[in-house]
Image (cartoon, rainbow, N blue to C red; front, side):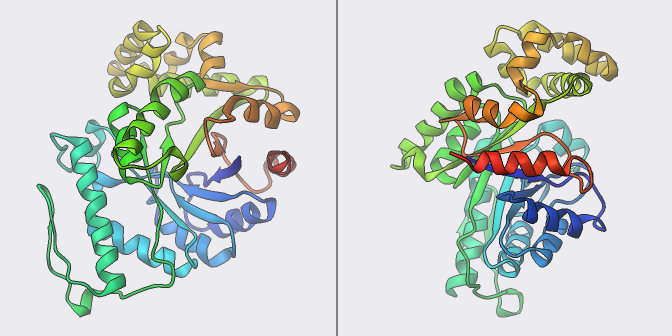
Length: 334
């Protein structure tokens, strides 16, 4: 089971030091998310300042971009890093696509996502093999790639694509066409075992593949000391207030709590949400263990469910370096 790290939401300046320490500690990959900053820009610095750690987007918002811009950014990062890039893509939710990115929300998000992935791969294939670009779907028509705009082949063109999702439609799509799947941090082992993995397996079966063809990456809420409990409660409450994510709470019989959290979000009651997250909910959605017992708790909880884990904690040089080194070493132990 691999242990990865997340870049904290930071300007570009600190990224080289973070990347160098992540590689030195022994993380298997370093992920950049799309929250306060573009996720692709810091990865150029990660490529420049490291030699072997993998890195990727977890995630870049697909519906906020054209397939061509995604393809160019990924191609350059893969070339610069000798093939260490993992392209992680997610749809985001309708409100953010329409009101934060100013882009239209598709009638069929799963279908549109499938077409976008196909378009990205068609561009890569064109550049690598010199074949004419001719990708046509309901939403995309890509037929123009003159030599002036063609970056040409690279040594490591097989860029893995991980999809992200919460509900079964995107899970099945990942099983069909992706190389991996980013689980949402708001999950439980039960939801992962009973909803997400079966849906991915169903999609894989449709394409004649096995689950072994995909890597499952899971960000994990953890509580290692009492002061972290309210922060994680607040994060659970925030995510659970999203209507699209209601099935996660409902799977455990807490659908009414999800409805209450939604009402709080509508009236701006963000600071009250953590009060609705009980100890039972906290321990369902988070690993609660002392730091010295965390590696064992993670392995026990996710064995057979996930291939890569990332703690939902900021990885910042100078802050708990010994904790990270010890955890990375223990996670590598059998």
